[in-house]
Image (cartoon, rainbow, N blue to C red):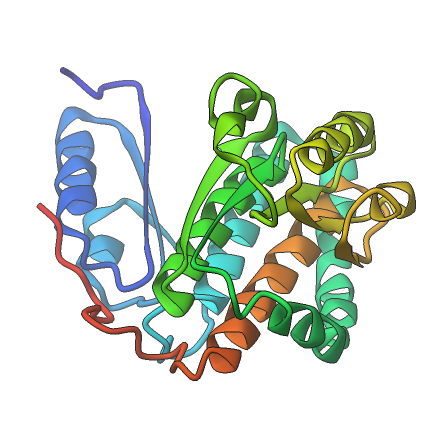
Length: 262
């Protein structure tokens, strides 16, 4: 397959992901525009690609990447905003640092909520729209740092089979950060309650919070701002749950900081 006339983007915290580097090298050899987003300006990926965006987040000491996930997401969104000349997206992104600061001030509230789920050994995480990839990332974080067998799904897909796995007190986390998807999330929360699930919501909707067992009201005036608030909140939640379980969230068992995949 020729990658000519393509835009090939590689994203890696360390810049050492062999599989991504191979695709970037192939793309550049074929004449594609290539871009690397890493947290290491001296990495192989940074030199392999024609262009490089540096996260500049400082050393990512924790095995479970957090700040580099936030900065990679931000740079990706900023690239889209510039490329599409989307002034509204640019404006929303300029507000993100302040939104993150407000979210970090919710640390104690989120930590108290997380301790409720010390009993959890499995669970489900749902999101739609912007929130879907964040649901998947939260599933990964709780797997890595808390050893909880969580699975992430698109809220819409969960109706088609997986919802049958819900039983009494099944921990289920619901992300809803876009106003046009609030109603969808509320319907899911009601359905989950019918099946006896313990539902927690990360949301900017005050109404949704009345329909779940617990949750956190996120800052953010729009879906973009709320997306980043949800990222910070779920990272805090995973960290606090790990600590409540007596674990070390910075050094999960059997994992290393850099994984070389080919």
